[in-house]
Length: 330
Image 1 (tube, rainbow, N blue to C red):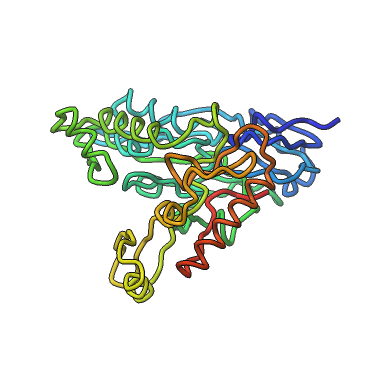
Image 2: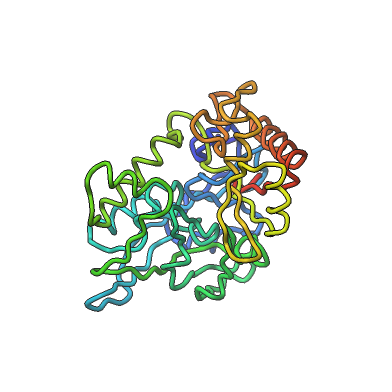
């Protein structure tokens, strides 16, 4: 019997699994042979299924938020990896805990947060993360990684590099502020949103509301139009390459990282080549955000993948820049 995975990936791609296990307690993992061969899915917001899965698919539904430590100024929380990320953000804001409000409305599960080093509007999970606990898929040993040991980079961590496919993240720790929050409003359109509403001293809730409003205006709701958020990473190139490109493309947008590196908005590159809003069959680049590839209802994973490859080729041939995908192709 084949089991549909359509409702377990935000692209809404129809693919089938040989077997599905709904993980609610970690002890269930002890009953599964060849755990390393299984496919783990959390919120399904960062995968593109291009084929049926001829192995056990484990849907992470673990839950739990508890306090590790607390003082007058800060609190450290432990969160199960199956929790929904945005619901965690709202929970923290309701409690008055600051530090992750800029990452409101990022789709997916808590377990994916350190794996991807998720981030938005000037903040990343590495800024607040204290530890990651994970089970080694061969030995079933529980291992704890410090922030440093996670080897965070731009949308990268050890769980996507040297430790890829070796661990299942069970829970994470984050340290947040209870007062005197350090707010970040200068990135993206947040300041404009606050100014338009005459908010001069924004609370963490104000910032969250701004981010939610901005994201909703630019990004399609996966429940309505299948997508996985930003499909590509913003490429980082050398200052030398950037200066060379500026002589040919003087309107090229960029963000200086340091004296040696410059970040280029992938959305700008894609839009400049006419892909934004372009539909090809059942897929296309979204009309409001070129970075977002969408499923208009009946797209196969291979259709979306082919579109992504065509876009990458177009950017490479014009700018000599290699686009990397944020989404995991399966």
